[in-house]
Image (tube, rainbow, N blue to C red; front, side, top):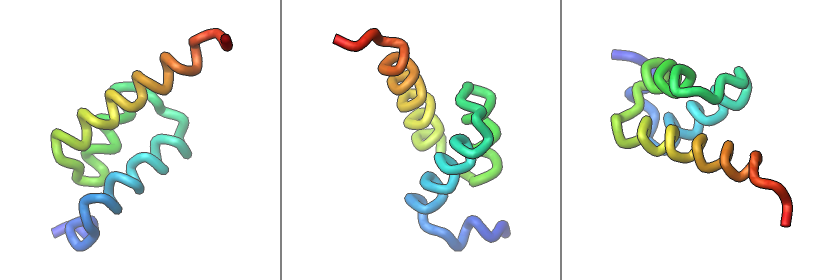
Amino acid sequence: MTHYQLIGDKERLCRAVQWISDTGNHTACGVEEAAKQFDLSPLDEEFLLRYLAQTAAARSKPPE
């Protein structure tokens, strides 16, 4: 049993987001690594992939 099993689902997701942010690995491979490291569910992993895609699109969009 990993120590992450004692942490709630939301806490694991928050820690994964923090890890991705800290490492700067905002790629699908980074999300996959975070999902393994923090024992995320497939739905959490999908959420992270969509979130990163949306934030990347928003950053690349020119200001109005």
